Image: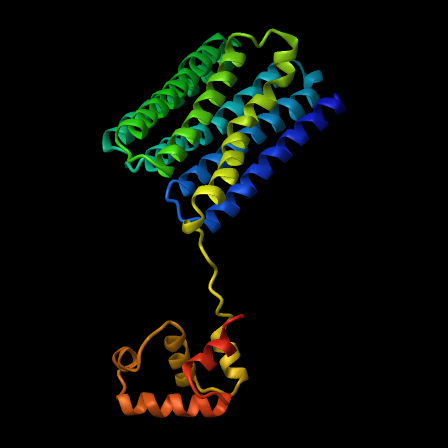
Length: 313
């Protein structure tokens, strides 16, 4: 095994994992609907890369002494592991691109995409069966490389092009239009460059040895762009974590009853006495009595005192 190649691939995987974790953090921090399907796309892309890396760069060299048939068997295994991951990954990429321009995935796309993808899986299974009987691998390569992969590329380019068109023509100007155009252009260029190198220039040595870099830049570059753009343009959509720190346990520690903790929770949510009365189905006099007991136990005089006790400064 070439340990230099192994180290190189591990570093690439580490970069992809960083992009995934960075995107998870952004999803947790910002209220932008397109980011959840985009997160699934990035996770699927990482899984796709790991399967390729593990089987092609680790297992194939290890069993290379077993002959061509063992290598081809691993390639077949890789194909069947990669195809479902690829189908789900690209579907969520399309979904993220359309949500980014405030559209939903049309029903007809579901049928066409999944039917054609499953059709190529069946063809691949038949090509594998033919290979196992005859030892001829040509049909498997044709179905996977010139069928399934070309179909996926068409889906990516057409969906990115349509989303770009909608971003320019339909979306209102401003930050959302800028975010949509920037993200889509980065994805489109990264995919186009990678597939161009993979299909046309892969015989060039420097291209062959850097394909992993260009592959992972497909997910790393958009995440870097989002990390820069979101804090700059979408700070108002940042999810501010609640400053309430476990009211129930804190209230119990301060000697409040279960009902008093419920009332404190509603007070901290900005509810009036009348709101508390309606929500808990108790009389207004009872609400006042509970508040009096709460103030007495906590040694405060007003609602502001509760805020100072239960909310972080």
